[in-house]
Image (cartoon, rainbow, N blue to C red; front, side, top):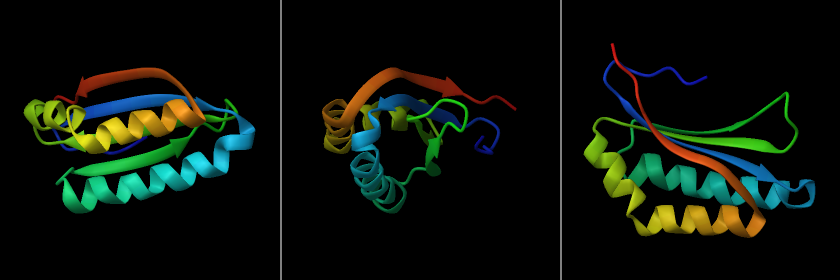
Amino acid sequence: MVQTSPGTFGLEMVVRVAHANRRELFQTLEGLRETVTAQERAASCELLEDCLVPNRVYWVERWATLQEIDEACRSDRFAMLRAAVELLGNIETVRKTEELS
């Protein structure tokens, strides 16, 4: 998956999307992904597709601190992300992770 530095924190969302909405969801998420890395100082933001489960998508943000993840979760951008996903698909899980050295 995504290589991370020791001590980084992750915000991960697993999404299922109907095949008919797949292209629109990817376009929307790609636009939001660029915002995360350019304007919000995230270490990385990845949009991944599961090759074994059709129409399952992973949204993975990496941040330096847990506080930054909490701020990201309260942001208008994250609210837009959730709204777009809920409009075009279904959120399976959202979780925070910590990568220890």
